[in-house]
Every structure is written in C-alpha cells, then in structure tokens.
Image (cartoon, rainbow, N blue to C red; front, side, top):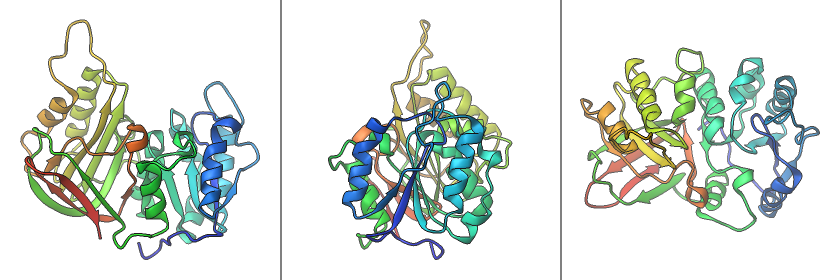
Length: 304
C-alpha cells in the first residue's frame, strides 16, 4: 500500500474496455456517478469500438489500455465490463510505467486476468469491485464500498460481514487476498500470470458454469498446488450454476469443499463478492486482510 494512493476530488480517472464491447448508453450512468464523486472521467477515443463480441481488435484494445497504464495523470482505471477478451491482450501490454506510477485497476470477472498478472509480476494491489456496466446511477452496496475504499473514507480500508454457512470451516487468517473468477484463474494456470497462492487468502467466485466444470477447475487448481498452503479460502458467489440431465450429485459449494477436504485452513462460503449485482462488495487484492470464519455467527473480512 505504500506505493498506492487514495483518490481525491479532482483526480483524473479513465474507462477501459479490455474485453467485451460497451455502448455510450451503458456507460452514461457510471460516468455520471463517477463525476458526482468529483472525479474527472476520461473516455478514451475508441472506447466504443466493436469487433464481434469484443471492444475492437486485440491490437486496438491493447493500445487503448496501454495508453491509460502509461498516463501518470490517470489515477485509476475502471474496466467497463468483463465477458471475455482480456487474456487475448495481456501479453501485448507493458506494465513498466504502471510500476513507476501505480494506479488502481478496478473490476472483476474477466478482469481477474489483470488482477493476477499485476499481482504476480509487479506485486501491486488492485481492486476487485463492481464495474461501470453494473452502475446504474443510484448508490448500492457495491458502489458505496468501491467509493469508500478508493477515497479512503473509512478508518479501515475494508470491513465486510456476511451470514455463516453450514460448510464453513472455522478459523482466523491474516494475509493478503488474491484471486477472483475461478474460470479465469483456471485459464491462467502455467502462465506467468498465474498467482502464487501460498500463504494467501484465496478468493474464488464464478457464474453460469456447469457443475462438472466447477469440479474440473477445482481439481486443476488442486493438482497445480494452488490450494496448498493457503492462509484461508473465501468462496464468493457461485451464481446460476447448471447441471446435466444426469445430475452431477453435488452442489457447487460441496464441490469446492471436497477439493480442499484434506486442508486445514479456514473456509468461508457465501461471501459477498462476485456476480452478485448490487451486492458485489469491493475487496482489495494484494493487501493484508484479516478473515474470521464462523459457523454460528457472521463471518468477517477486514483491513488493516
């Protein structure tokens, strides 16, 4: 955190579209909200480009994002939406200027590619939080927690509570939080963007997956050693899961628990992170947090 700075009124921030395309109408409410926070919002030329599902060609999206990474006047980059496409440009990007002039990179879902790459190569924190496509002009828990973290309004950087889950494994952990979308973490295995999870609190969440694929991904992380030596595991939204005609026989939560059944660190299910709409609370990645997991009372994650 010593390299990072909270935002102030008058700061310049920018929108980026490294994955799926967006439209001016979709971005208008978010731009209005960010401006209401006193920020100067940069909408780069070419933000609304289209190539199939993507926000322009790989070269176009990389060039646009590179210009924002390199600009020392831009204090935060808000990734407009996820979907798919960030992995196609990650190796085109040069993060050397970001190392010299750190700034907040904000998003979730497909933006896990950026979170993971920045964490593994630079060791800088990023913010797992809602994105402009999910911002509709009114304050929600998702936008409030993002605002309060970025502006440093609370004495604590973050402090979230949620209801206990029957599958929770009780315990206490204090470590940096890493992770994000399970499908993306799975897709980065074996690359230089793969995060080192040992000694960390790992956050996972996912959306719209078949249960057998959740199992495949958890087994892959397990075999790659990414579930070994964790300080703790936080399971966010596992939303809109699908099953086959012949049922897989386990819920998504049971699949996760089975993959870490022989581990001994605390595990919290039902955490308010991921594809949860207005309840996708902001959580910093790469920053030390304390995790308290219970079965009979609320769980909590907070920092410092």
